[in-house]
Image (cartoon, rainbow, N blue to C red):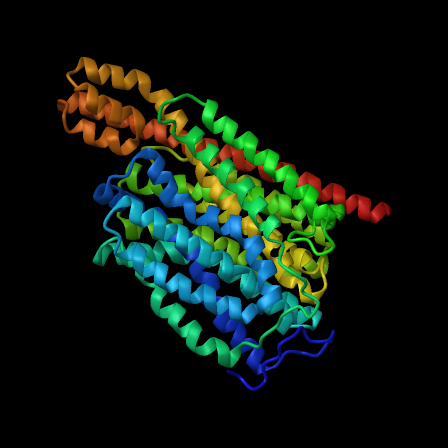
Length: 519
């Protein structure tokens, strides 16, 4: 263990960080990249994984978004826990768990095993992410350096949207689908070896006691809501009564959680921070922006592979502009923030995302991937100021000794938004597909398609591709054309949703800017 380790939060200082801090930042960039990469890399692996393990519709949703939901559910607890037991210690615990769960996921022999591994990965990711951001805020006390460090952190966090598909595409071209998970193991081993040398320890000297009732209430609120959303997204019989009831129960428990937090002297989540209108706007915007980006990412990568019939590597290269765009946007954010007040800088960025969303609505099922690539790049570029400057607002709203708790709020917004985006926009796209395929499938049945194959064709695009092999050439072509058009309609829906969301958020931040000027 490093001899320069400190066991409590350091006194306030404006001293500039030295070489060791920047080397520590480089090390923290690794788990930051991997936690985000683990969500994005799965997009490209999904078709092969589905063909191998044959999950049901609900199981497929659990595979894709259980990781993000677990991270969102536990990150608040983990952020507060890091303030109490030590942020470096929690980081190393998370790195060990993430590496082990990655190996388990890579060698999964069934759907249940893979879902369990993804749940464990989400739990470990919840320990990693607030620890990285909280350590950065502690290591970089000088304001300008801290802003640069947070921008680098945000760039790594969201560049995974580009790195994940490219790396995943390369691995899928040469290895089996489990290789996309196995890549995390050696990186986490490096974090375990170098972390005690490069990273100092920080913890809150007035940390108080972790309230187990609050922890239980937070999870009891999140899990029923997650269950309800998934059951509504992919119905499996029984009607909507049970999932709706689960959401209502989760919301009720959430109200109890909020009530308890407002009464505690040292709450698990300091809800009083929401009295700051800019803080509230940033967290809401982080959720909604992540919804749009994750939903577009899921539908866009599937469109490139399943509709345009591109290989995983080629699809990854065409979709890489999303990650590169948000990475460039976060790197440019500090410069924009020095020229404009923070709400105005975020508003300008979000307004720039709207044309990108509208361009996505022009993508055709029989066209080229270029409009999609340009659209997601412009969309992502505009979100850069929100992710970089907004994160600085969140962690800067609390004293340094509570940075872990504040970081957890930012991470909860990102991961919950990402998981909701895949679940909600994915479900909306699926619903639109199923609605539009009713007529074409009925025609295919008239042409001799068996009822079992017809059911699969109505459910998913992959089912329609399989069903087409059982039809004469003309009927098969008609079915595939209809399926491609129906799936592309879901992508267009994501584009329209994004345009509305980003335009509304831009207006919200412009109003905040005007109020600050008037005040």
